[in-house]
Length: 280
Image 1: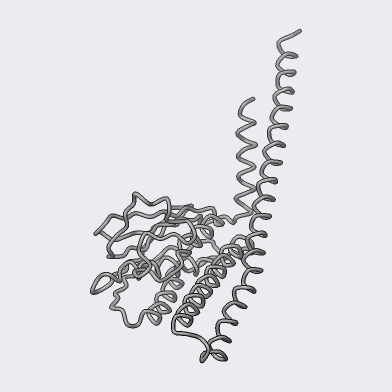
Image 2: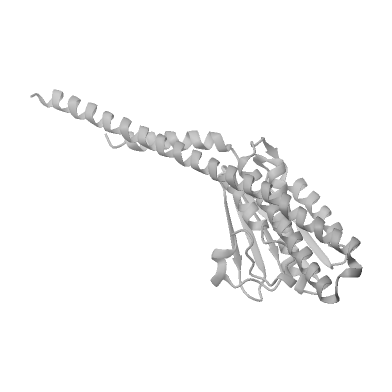
């Protein structure tokens, strides 16, 4: 067999291997996508369907208090209050699960987002919510990015709201918002002057319903960072936290300035194909 013919046979064999590997990667990617979609659909269904019995429980407690108050002892009324509070808390948690599911399931609408304008509108909204808290905001000019504007609003709302809660331990809460960019990526941060977090437990930060502060210091359900993380991941970005006890907390996130979720999936597959081709 001539060297030229041998090289041709080896090349054809390598091409067949590459094609099989590429097809395998595409099948695995499709299976993972389908499994994630099924899991999200199940989460949505469970959270949606469970709200009905929880609301019914709250309604019956209200009926008992209104129509049978004279028949209920002081201890009984105390028990009913516990049931009502627990039902309300459960309903809020189910609503948060629905939010997480919807963020994963919704279609993204990409546009060039003015992040400075978006962050400023969120600040104004939260000033109203925390009108009785002394707050100072330092909003720097932010780079624009290619993103879903409404989902980005949710990210800013979650991060700024968390920063305000963390800074509530100070006489004056100070929140700084800034960003930077390179040709392909925009990076942002939200920094507070709060009590800081114990980063030994940082693995809990992005899990739903987890907190590193006691409930009395943080009146949310612990869903904000989990929601922000899912949104940033859908934009093929990264989100991370830096903090130290007594030194405040800084939340960072970065997203692409150029491509959408579907575009990045295509680029990913092209990169895999190119990498396999380089094995020739």
